[in-house]
Length: 293
Length: 188
Image (cartoon, rainbow over all chains, first blue to last red; front, top):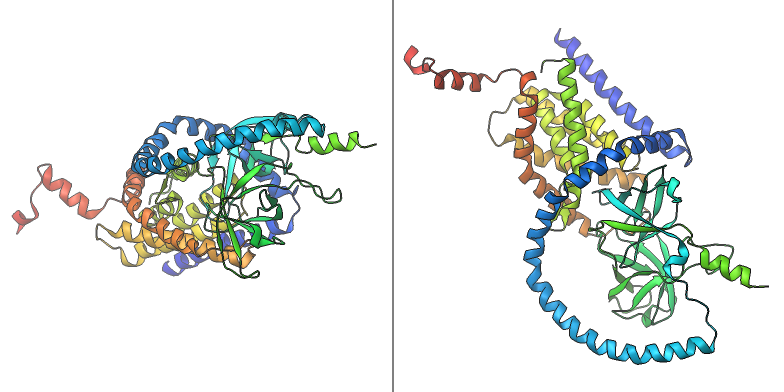
């Protein structure tokens, strides 16, 4: 009797482990439209309304915890913001002068209507769930293919780039955040005019690396990093040019080879309630192509 | 554990509610910069209360549910959670620990198995991005947070599954005494 129980227990355990390995192998082997990924998308579609409802219902709980954290951080934030305010006042004065000059220059070079975000047909979506793993930084949003959302479209919020669409179904989509280990985007340091690749750092969600920079010593702390956009027609980028990714937090190392540039993302990836998906990210590229004879 | 469709339904409900709560609320509340992870706690609680096979099955199912909803590699979470659930169940079957703080220790150990196991599997499957040493800090903080949450999660699981669990002899003896039964001392 005891032997039978032991054999049964071992058989069930072995079957479960085997199931896991079969799933892992099949998932890795199949293409993006494979049966397992389709089942995954279908299941997400089914559970999405429940998750969205739960997300709204439990928002007061999250806000309560957020309030405690905010109160503790408030004092330090206030001092920091006061010094930032003083700096920004000076900056605003300088920028007002620069803005007038800029207007004149724009007129001179007949710079067309700036490629504002509206040109990219943004779709506003609510975030209703997020992953908690150090390896997969994803959020789920309540807009999908029926709203024009497609895989690889860029996702932003009012601060800057948030990520890109990973998978999409009819009414919802999974967004891969900047901090996901599979994410990568070509960036440009605006002041130094240096291109490079923005990569995540696994285990450190508030930190990004600006890598493969040709002249890294030109990049300084506080420089803004924006998306580089499509540089070559053969390799079109899914991200339009000029979306703010973040600012350089620190530059480590003094040599060319060991220099690492750390970026703080502009968007607060831990607190996302609403995001915008740019459903026509190449609008500016199409416009320039049609304008060229 | 008494196996019935009602018991299985309750286990499924625990998994669904726990998984959705994790995704919609707990994962969005960062304490010391990291969110807690309820899933290993639920799995080890079920393992401790119901045994190794229910623990392993529950871990497998909950892992699959989380992998599906988060568009992660299917089978990864299942593998680590079924290990945690099975080991918690085996501990109960072999040692039947009676100390009140056992769920806390098992919760911490289960979280460590789940988080470290997940990390090791990720390395085995290949990581494209550079890995920061802060990952170690994150893992430790998740274990600490989960240790604090282990007891409440265990008590909730025990309350939900209580009708299907064998009556604890210690509890039965205490109840009989406090509700007018004879004190064990009076029999002597």
